Length: 99
Image 1 (cartoon, rainbow, N blue to C red):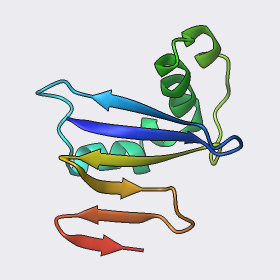
Image 2 (cartoon, one colour):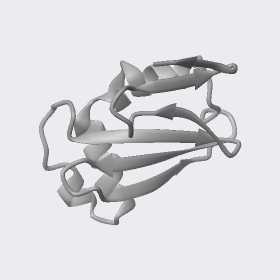
Image 3 (cartoon, rainbow, N blue to C red):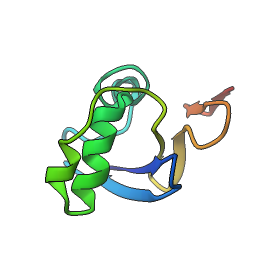
């Protein structure tokens, strides 16, 4: 299980989305890739997750692909493992920090 805090950068509003399927939602290199480079890196998917979490899925579908409107911070087992909230992206994985 992990928690994605999704921030709408223009407003600073944050939604906390739990990914808690015991088999599929285990944080690791594949999930990190999803948020850095794959589907969850695109604003259209982050927009949908943000608004779906607010209970407004219809608004969530009303968007286009872009980059930079949303940032995320991922917490797994109480520890920040991926963070885009700061100016330079910091990624922590297996005790390594990359800036």
